[in-house]
Image (cartoon, rainbow, N blue to C red; front, top):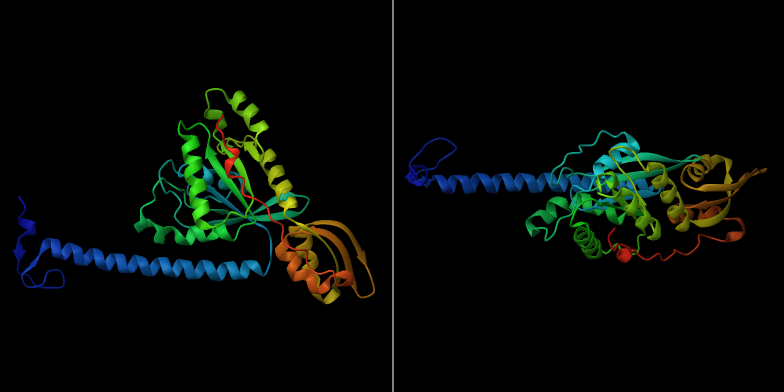
Length: 300
């Protein structure tokens, strides 16, 4: 029955002289693990280079986080028509996918999907997920997607909160997205509860219900983390005028002899880049401290 485990002599590249089949299997697995580690490191290097390029055009980044199978990829597809794999199974997303989303009035953000969390994530899988989890630390806002129809939704939320704490992203604001509300026994009651919760929105990523409310909430929360600037952008640096319009909210713009004078509400990352152009040498405003809303969830 277990003859394939007996010590065998062999030739070729598979079995060495007197090598057991189980030893062959172990050797092949070690080789595959080494290749996978190399692939993971290549992905991390690629994503790091991508984030550097993305930082040069400081459009706000929003990361989708949540328990596995909560509907993050479906929501990304609904918001961006990205065609990301969205399946009803664990770990359907293992690599980050980032797409551009328009919030209205010309404002744009980058929306990033991430791997779903689970309870007691095995340490062997941490390295495999590191490339996608690193995206979270770069975000201006987290969308915590919750399958509100799941019987253990509260426990899943706590699991995600614990992982976010371990990642050290406590300074990033969170918008709770109560997904699959249409699958709840009493959707109206769930919506009523969500209306009383700070930073919570009910949606159905599958049908698109609540998406407009979600985009409005995203726009509002991003505004809370922005800073006011007044800058004089030289005509030779017109790309900054475009960035201000795309990633911020312009209050006024005036064409002068030396450049475009703009008052605007912009992300802190862009404010830092605009600091040398500040009118009156005001510089960039200090960063805001916005607490992570971990305890907003009490269940529907």
